[in-house]
Image 1 (cartoon, one colour):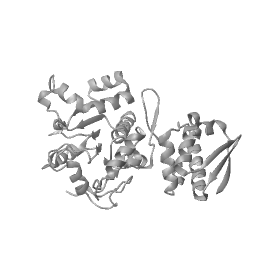
Image 2: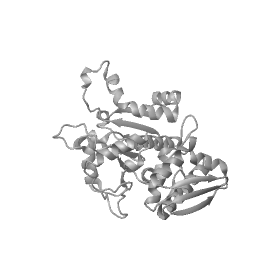
Image 3: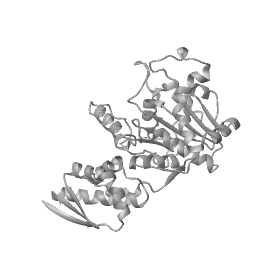
Image 4: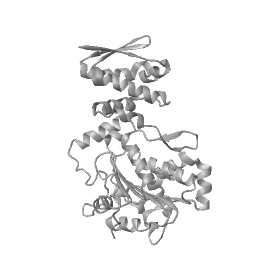
Length: 338
């Protein structure tokens, strides 16, 4: 057994790290099999030497996040522990450094995991970014945040959000209303994100002026989209032909983000996903980044992460052309494929 004593300078930070009724502390103790005792302004860590080493670094990492005003919850605690175990505790300071966008209510939105940070950085640096990963990793949310930030900075004149209206158990013809009301349920996640960043009134104003467009993918055919930030959501449900059509809509001064989860494809078995095909075809093309987010980047309820991990244990096929949490921009000096 080994014992380590830590000094804590700011009491308010350690209170945040401990959580309500020391719930965060209990997670650290359980995950690392250590005992943590609060001795006034010091913490005593007791356990195996390696686990005490991990616990000390995990607490220091959480204190760093708390000092920046981050609310420490179960997800933060488990993620920091995983970074420490992987020897990446030095990267904890990179989290929550840059604000992607400010919501209509003044809340700053930041990347909460290293995978998300890589994804956001790729969007900033590349004209086209493919964000691939499971539900809850912030693919769509962060893309919309980046789009609103670019629009506010006048880098683009329009935000265009689209997704394929692929039927998953229901047919459009059976849904009530006109065409717009039929496709609205498919576009609801995009509406929700825009409402949060712009507020309903501002969103309605820009929608009426044509600065914001939310439409099914089929509406993109035959258009050239200049000076726009274009997001294709749920891209795993595009066909190869639809994906090629969408990619060739790119105009001057525009940026494209394509998001999807290849484990949730609703296409018929004989149809190849346009997203899977694009990952293969576009790998190595200059100014295009392919980012893969993993279960470690899930920022929803902790149970979502466990569900994803359970399915991954069944042997879901890996995405070719990308490593977890990585982006793959092409080497400079190479031209685009034609």
